[in-house]
Length: 148
Image (spheres, rainbow, N blue to C red):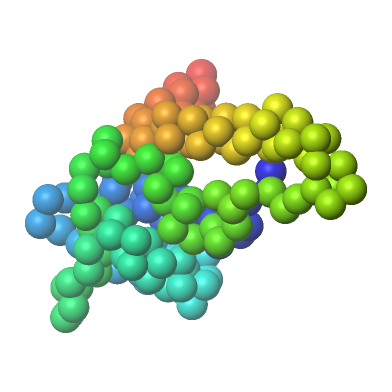
């Protein structure tokens, strides 16, 4: 499976927004783009899709920006990727349905549907909070290694 750059950046951005925003605070696209080294224009497109999916809330004005619409524990990687990856959850096209319907059914049931379900299960088992925790752990490990 290949996730597009937009999907990867959207996932990184939502984790960064979760890390930087508080209950009342918001984070600007410029701040996220600067911290992550992502093009502001490209990031705005991904964030707009996250907002449209109900994962982010926005505030306008001089202190405007974005924050999570729900707790980081209640948003999964699947939620974030599905918001920006158009084909992530699409069913596989038929392969040989016209000439070999039995083989097509076997492929769909034993390969494609199982693969789709495994991907959904895997991505829905990781929350934004899990990624925040893992980021903190990685940061801690890197700091320890630098101090040796």
